[in-house]
Amino acid sequence: GADDELERNLTSFFRLDHEPLQLVFGAADPADPALDLVRRLARRHPDRDVAVVVAPPSDAASPKVGVLEALLPRARHGILLLSDSNVRVSPDEVARVLPSFDDARVGMVYQPVVGIGERRLPAAIENLHFTEFAGFLAIAARLFAGQHVVNAKGQWVRRAALEDVDGFAGVRDSGADDYMLSRLVHAAGWQLALSDVAVRTVHRDWSWRDLVQRHLRHSGLRRRLCGWAYPLELLLNPVPWALALLVTPLAAWAVPLVCLKVILEVSVAGRLRNEPLAWRHAALIPLKDVGYFVGWFASFAVRSVSWRGRRYAIDSGARLVRLGAPLEDGGAGRGAGGERA
Image (cartoon, rainbow, N blue to C red; front, side, top):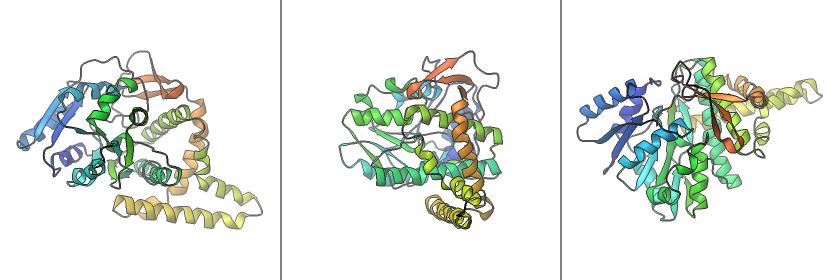
């Protein structure tokens, strides 16, 4: 599919400055135009070790894991990065992350995630949310609660650790395969490590439909994956509570609290993204927080989600259950989970 700035994203992997390095690309549809783009890029970079894989039909409920299972036999090295086609890496990214594996006990390293490239308002809101939730809240969860919140945009795994958990067999039907894989690796006796190198995911021209679909799918997965932690999201979203003060004797505190949240988020997002956040987008932070507050409650009404052209029910433990036939649009929508492995 045609993710935002797909060619720039894929080109960034060809420009990684590290040897030895192998790039393994794949998609489930042989007619996917992204495969032709990868082949053209491979011809432009004949010095690169590249494999292009068309994944055969899979009975894995997770469409992403079905592709990953097809890619794994082609991977030849001992450290693997699992990533998506809407990710853009820096030339020195491998060299900066690999030292985390110097400790032989570390089986998985994951990167905090930031969103970049916003052009439309829904994309700006998604990037703000991604940077907050998968970026500095993931860092805070590790530093202050000792919890690992792993996201697959920058998920590195030692091959020996992956073999210890029988590859992707344990996450074939999971809607949160990244997090569940990290739990399996940890349960097998390996350590997890949070990298200090943020990974960038590009959201540029999203629609409001993209935004709502992504949020409802992810919130539904989180609620079923870890029910005790889901209510904590309300406590970590102070803006709606601050605005509620407007109808109380503490109304004078509302505006300062909202401003404090905006300033904090702008400063941390700018530091993680290594680029300033436009003030017109910073002004969206209260709107974002109120919208996600409403979405938190709306997730309880969600019984099924759309992902890569299929409808799924979400069972306990974030297990995906297929519903009916593929959708007509083939699942190319970004908000429906159009990322390619």
